[in-house]
Image 1 (cartoon, rainbow, N blue to C red):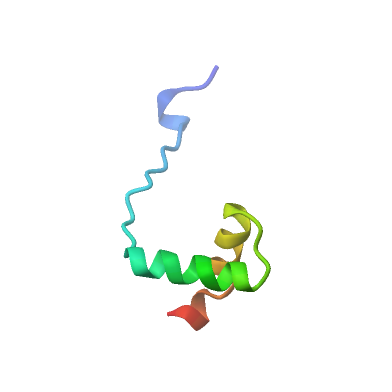
Image 2 (cartoon, helix red, strand yellow):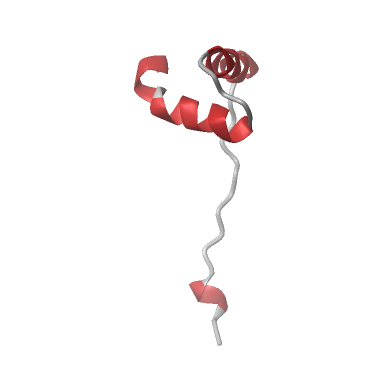
Length: 51
């Protein structure tokens, strides 16, 4: 049996600026993204370039 100390809780508390999200989404769709996972993958792959 597992213990409470073994559970890792990941919080999604990072805030993002709306224009950044929209920019990444638009660029990803232009680049061929077909869904939110594709947009996320695009953002992660281009993170250094977008910074």
